[in-house]
Image (tube, rainbow, N blue to C red; front, side):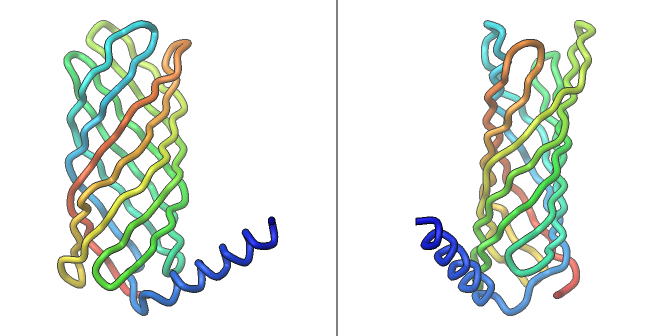
Length: 170
């Protein structure tokens, strides 16, 4: 069973690598972001609106190293996340789906004097549509965003959309 898994994984990797002959060195994303937060501790869930930005250094046609930051604002609370990790892209001629696993920190504040930084992680992916050789539209990026403020784990949903600019060629 393990052998079949590895053979399949290698075959898929080779197929993905062969789908695009040209790709950028760095992809920079910026756009709107929605956060459905679950604060835990018996508090009501909230809707945060804000921004997200990321930069992905493309090591090869399918593997990238990504840095991702965001800011979400709701009522009297703010949350900023700083996340880093690998991204796998399935590059096609016009469409590029991707998945990523990111870890880092989350800094939360409120007007009531609360201010702390905790560990955070995001698991998810998205879909980019090529507009020009240098610009793609990120139709959606959907992430499970986990944080742990206080003694409760927050199970948050982050959805973003915007523009990706491609720099350099590999």
